[in-house]
Length: 282
Image 1 (cartoon, helix red, strand yellow):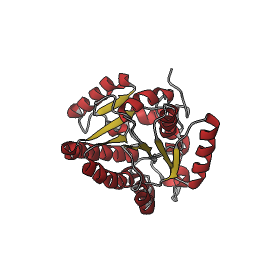
Image 2 (image 1 turned 60 degrees about the vertical axis):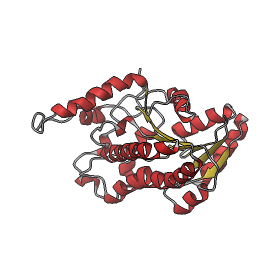
Image 3 (image 1 turned 180 degrees about the vertical axis):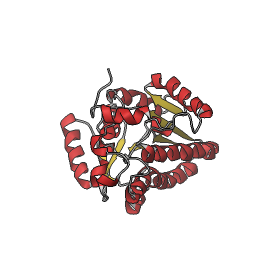
Image 4 (image 1 turned 90 degrees about the vertical axis):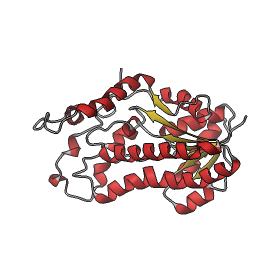
């Protein structure tokens, strides 16, 4: 059965790759982007690649954009749009922290509400949240982003249980660290902080994303299987090899004490100072 898929945040990264891959397979796609300049750029690329898809402006934090989107007839909603605000919770300005949650939590959830009610009425539909492994575990200097994704995980699980009686599927895609530029930009957001950087606890001018990153092309095909309902797995970690590591990390919290590592810099904080931006995984 042909399914019309709406993807938010399709101007770059995972969203863009998935949108084009679906369109190349002749699936009806509504690829949405945050700003109008991205519309024309995506339209041009679609023409050059010889694929057809509807391209629209949809800033998930904009009430008028959300209302406009609810008029579109879709079968699958893919909540992919997100931002990543890096920094310690003791340093990040309030405005940046609030922006993190407006873009990653409130905007997508408010967009979902309108489509979910239509799916309930139709007794069918699928809602996919592109979360992150950061929604399962937490690293230092990424607390704002991880906090937003933990919240998305909670909302997605609640929706899954609430909508099951109406035949509406809900699932998550949880990508690990991929080299799309998204993670590296997280550690550059301090450049727009309206505070004195000489007064922060950590020196963000010397830090970078503290992990090697995988080839983003690996995400596309597994994500498409989730989006089209070719798998009924609720949580979908990509790459799958990270599952056992994440499970071990979650279990370790039960044995964590508050005093064992006092006075020691966390290894991820140190790696943030040591690693080069955009380091690929071998």
